[in-house]
Image (cartoon, rainbow, N blue to C red; front, side, top):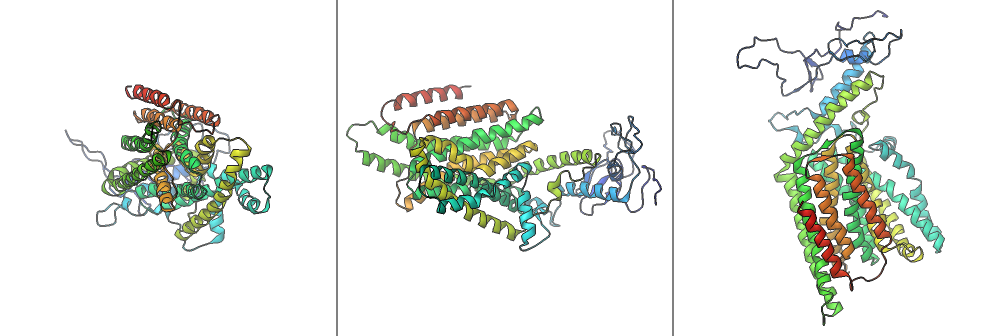
Length: 568
C-alpha cells in the first residue's frame, strides 16, 4: 500500500506482454515469446505468431503507467521500459493494478475485433455474425434504447439528433396550419429539416443491425436501409403524379452521392492525410456499374428525343412507346442489380470480405496506436465505439419501424408543399428534384460515409458511396417505374437532355478520379465544385418544355465532350 513498484517488475495478477510477445485474443492473456533458437543459413528463426494471437510489443503495465502525469514536473527524453518508445518528456509513474487493468482491457477489446478465429471446424468466423455487434442484452430496454439512439454512431450524427424537436412540429403543422403561401413555406421548411433526424435514425439502426452480420452483408444492409427514405419519397411523389420531380430526384440523388458525398469523403480524409488509398476491386466494380447504369438510364431518354422531331408521329404514341421502353429498361436494370448483389454477397464474397476484413484490421491497429497515445494523456474514453453499448436485435427492428413510419408521415407533408413552393416561390422542378430532395433523402448515408473517410476507412466509405449511387440508379429509380406500372401511372425514364448530360459527364469525371485507387483533398474539392456548378445551373433552369429546339445541338455537345474525356 503506497509503495512504488519498478516499471520493469511484473506485479502479481497483472496481464503483462513482453516485448515481442503476443496477446491471446480468446483468453485475453499474454503469450510468452518462444525461446530463441540458433540462426542457421537459409532458415528464419523469427518468432511466428499463432493463428489465435496477434503480435503486440508493448507492456500493458507500461501503457497503464502513462495514464497520469508526473507530479514532480520531471521532464526529459526518456523511454518507456520494454518498448523503446520515446516518452516525449514524460516519466511514467509507478504501475497500479487499476490502471493496468483498464489499459489491458482497452487493448484486448481492440484486438479481439479482428482476431481471425475459427469455429472449430476450420471455417473463419468472418462469415459469422461479428461479436462487436453483440449488446449483451435482449429484448427492449427503453432507457438504454433512448440513450444509445441519441448517442448515435459519430459526433456528426449525434449533433443531427438535436433536430428531433422539428419532427413533431412538422407533423403538427401539416394538420394545424391553414393553406397560405407563408404557412406552406413554413410547413415545407419544417418537414425538410425533420426528415434529417429520421433518416439519421434509420442509418444508425442499419449500422447497428449490420454489426450483427458478416462484413459484406453488413455493408449491403446499411446501404439498403439508408435507401428506405428515398423509396418512400419516390412512392409518395408517384401517387401525387409528380413525375418530373421523381425523374429529377433520381438523377439528383446519383449526382449528390457521386459528386457531393464522394467529394466530401476525399476532402475530409485528405485534410488528415496526404493521400488515401482504396481497393482496386471496389473502385473498378463500382465504376463499371456506374457506366452501365448511366447507359441504361440514357436509352429511354435518347429514344424519346430522337423520335420527338419526326413528322407524322403522334405525341401520345411517342409517350406510350417511351414508357414501354422505360419499363423494359427498368426490369433489365433491376435484374443487373440483383446479379451484382449475388456476385458480391455469394459467389465472390471472399474477395470483398477480405478487403473489408483488411480495412478493419488496419483501422484496429491505428486505433490501438492512437488509444495508447490518448491513454498516456489520461483519455481512456478514446475509441469509445468499441466500448459503447449496442442495440439489441429487437431494438434495431423497433427503431427501424418507428423511423420508417415517421419518414412516411413527413414525406407526405413535404410532398404536399412541393407544388406550392414551385408555383408560389418560383423554384424550378429541376432545382427541387436535382438538389433539394436528394440532399435530405440521403443525409444519413452521406454522414456515415464522410465519418468513415475521416477515420481512414476509405474502402467502407467508397462501398457506401458507390453502393448507394448504384442502388438509386439501378434499383430505386427503376422500382418507381415498375410501381407506377402497377398503379397505371405513365412513369418513364425519359429525362431532360440537361439532366442526362450532366449525369454522363459526372460518371466520366468520377471514373477518372477512381482510376488510380488514390484520393486527396484536391480531388474532393473538384468534385464539390462540379456539384455546385450543376446546382447553380439547375436553379436557373426554367420549367418549360425544351424538347423542340436545341435538343440535337445539346446532345451533340454532350457527346463530343464525353468522347474527349474518354480519350484521356
